[in-house]
Length: 86
Image 1 (cartoon, rainbow, N blue to C red):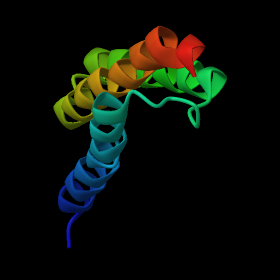
Image 2 (cartoon, rainbow, N blue to C red):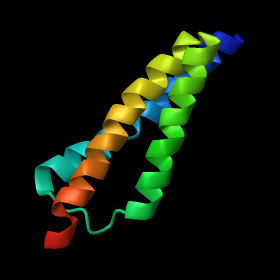
Image 3 (cartoon, rainbow, N blue to C red):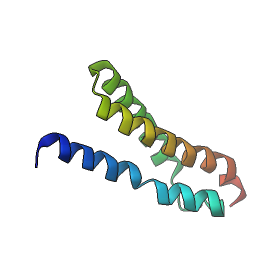
Image 4 (cartoon, one colour):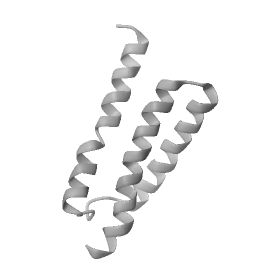
C-alpha cells in the first residue's frame, strides 16, 4: 500500500466520521452533548489545516479539510443556535 492511498483513506474516514453527528444533530436539534469549546477550537484548527494545504498546494489536504470544515461549522452553528434551548 503506498503513502498516497493510505493518506486518501485516512482523509476519507476522518472526514466521513462527522457525517453521523451532523445528521443526528440536524434531525434531533439536540446539541446538549456537544462541547462548544471543543468545536470552536477544532473548527479553527481545521481552518488552519485548510490554509496550510492551500499554501503547500497539497490538494488532498485542501479537499479533506474543506469538507471537514463545512461539517464542523454545521455542528458549531447548530450548537450556537440550539444550545440555549437545551
